[in-house]
Amino acid sequence: MPYVENDGRGKDRPVLVIARRDDDHVYGVRLTSRAHDGDRDFLPLGSGAWDSQGRPSWVDIEQIYLVHRDGMRREAAALDLERFTRVARALQQRYGWDAGA
Figure 1 (cartoon, one colour):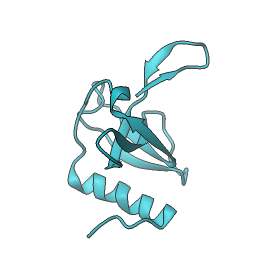
Figure 2 (tube, helix red, strand yellow; figure 1 turned 90 degrees about the vertical axis):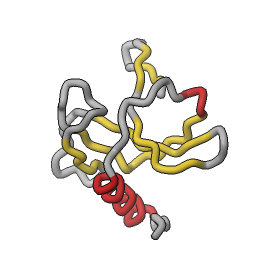
Figure 3 (cartoon, rainbow, N blue to C red; figure 1 turned 90 degrees about the horizontal axis):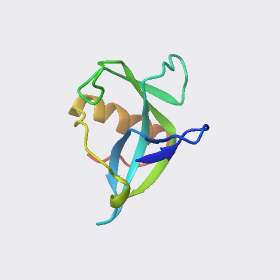
């Protein structure tokens, strides 16, 4: 999704889509390659096809984004089921959500 750096540069913010709200909107959490070891707000994902440089990634579970489909610029990669399930469980524990069966 698009965002602006503090210096005014426009960039794309990588997000992991976690759920669909309706036909036009999805919920997502921010991905970063900046290390956050030991930070309770970040879940380590390791590396994957979503980062062309093969860097380890973390998902920020502190903030949930509502993204309109027009704000989605591209699809980078799909997260495997095991890692997606870890993210879903972390969100369920943090917010008391039902992650599904």
